[in-house]
Length: 615
Image 1 (cartoon, one colour):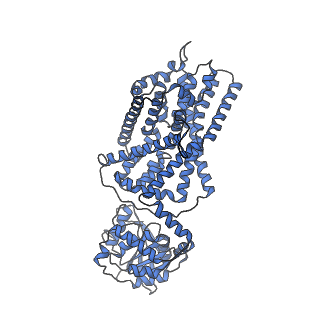
Image 2: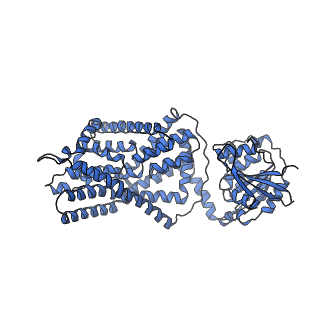
């Protein structure tokens, strides 16, 4: 008895392929793995309208028959009959998402060019019509040369017609023009086919198309992206100032209350100079954190973030990476830890390793308090153009410096220790939509809570330890307490190393606890200056951290400190995650060495250039 014919479902990810497979096969399914790989194999039985039983396989979603991932490699080999132990399919059903037709038609052309019996399932037509897009299947049939059947898998619409189409499908002999098309030519053809198949579209759909033509333009798109980022960093200072001032005033009131209620002594000093001065110095930057994440969440929820990744693909390719690396790097702006973990989606091992190694150069939210306190203290609050604040401009430049540094390092790594060709990148662009206010509020609350929890745990603990090290042993009469302390002696040793780049002892001291969390550098400085203030000088004790910095640092020192934090390694948690993701200490050690080297060189260069310029 001859085996039943084998039908394979193919298509891009998110085309509704699995839903169609379930509708066609029902409960007659089995799931296993393809031999030798971890890719899932789903097969089932269905009966065509003629009564013929067939075996159906749901192949992994793919964007091309030139594989860039294990899933795509399995799909390509099965379709071509090159997979050991797996017979080539006798016919193919290509599943297209009707609402994202142009993208899906690129792969459909590649499948049809194979010449196998093929039918097209134009799936999710109900969702396309809901969005105001009505398509003409006949026009698609004429353009593709195969039967096109509108389907709604979840409602079992079009299944009988699809069965008839696959039963009637025949071997084709595509001409050399179809088989030899390049990817660019297929994209041009897909655009023309999609336009010709549109019977009507709503104003909303036309608006979305016009937005994509503008936001994804090869030259205009990146300009819009960087202009948007520029606005974000302007807002971080302009919008946050009154809220930050209110929080700083609240910390001052709490300090006054503790001074009034708690008797003088070490315990009161711990509360005022340690907890309130240290932790409070970080908490006042909560408004900047919230504003930054507000913009990030809006870009994600609106669908713009995926388009930003698409735009960045060309720039990433220039340094040997692909757009796949953009999302993990973007996540690193919040925190390098989830960014490094997100590299698991990168299939090329060299791409993944390079992305892990440069992730700490993305300016995480923990650096924002450091940047904000230095900028507020040393950069005048004035405008340099219509609506352009100098402080926001400097913050923007620091973020850009981190991005440029990451790209330069990636280029060097891809030509040396992680040498290899850049992999391809195709992604599905989500629909534009207005962010839901409730989702935004939940997202902002979660990120604010994470920041406050760090302030109440890691920063609190490190600040208290630092206060203890700064206060013991107690100084003799007339001796400076910081000079006499354990922390002071440690800092004096480190100061010898960092003195050539313009750092004093107090700056050196702040670098040590900053390895626990970047923002601890702010609390460390605040605690150090609170302890160092003369006991009998209430004005010195009450001075805000920004005023303390202006009184003790020069502008070249401040600029060097900023340059250090652009490149310095992330917290120890980041190093631990890097070790876990790379299965050893080799690459974390390499990461620490090159980041500390960059931080030292650029901080020193910044300091001496600023001194030479007379700043």
